Image (cartoon, rainbow, N blue to C red; front, side, top):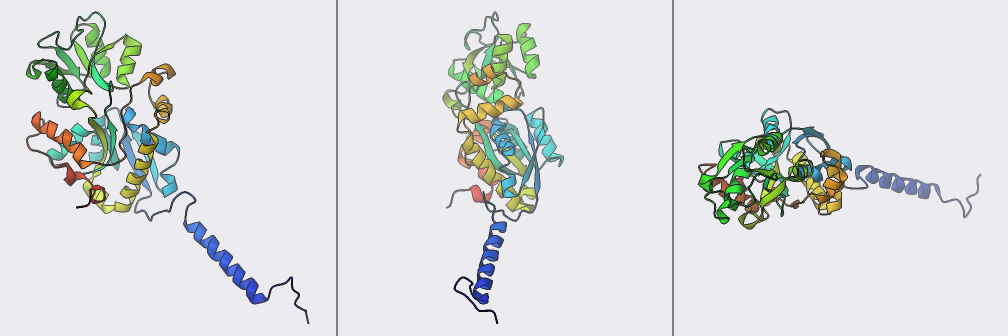
Length: 330
């Protein structure tokens, strides 16, 4: 018979130790070293984006695989404009769309059943404004009683912010002659003296300055437009309701990414990978802020301005477009 020594534990003690170890290993296999994995209804989300600065935090999150650490794969679907991103959402080609607050709230006013998933960007000084080229003779916003201004869309943010800013400069907003055209068309029209100024946002302002020698006539992110909410991420309400955990995880990770973007270096580093600007221009781009919460009160400011500007006929209640979990208690 084999004799038990002091260096060899009894069989039942060894068995107990093995059970404990297996239990610990089992618990580690369920929990990620970075974050718990929720049980997601969808493993993948397609997000329509443009090359706007606003999308920098989302791109950081994808590059760093922050969504994957939560069990979610996010694929970015590039679009030329914010309105095309919305069209991709309506067509079912994507699950979430990055877009301007004006077009998405206008869509909601027209009956689109949407749910906001997160705010993307808030304007800062010199992040949007009227620019002109040397020699146009338009050196001051009040230099002409009826200036010709190019915007990306007649009923968009450019029109709203330009009217607001010009009114403070003593120009009758109703006298402004707006023309819609893309960036390249604006630069050509300025060169031909067909318009007096063009409303641009960063990084197009920096691009116009670098490539065409443009200068800012007036900063439209001042006064009443200071810290103005510019863009958000949106999903169709029924799809978000069908897959609540998946979209909640998307919102949580987006919030973390927005927090990372509080460091300008992070934004400028990623901006250099998706914009047409060189390192010098990227370093000079004016940056706004990347909100870390979905704030219905803040976004109501956009909706009310749209109503006052007669872009929509009735006042939009933004709180009805926000997920219940994002609303304040009470």
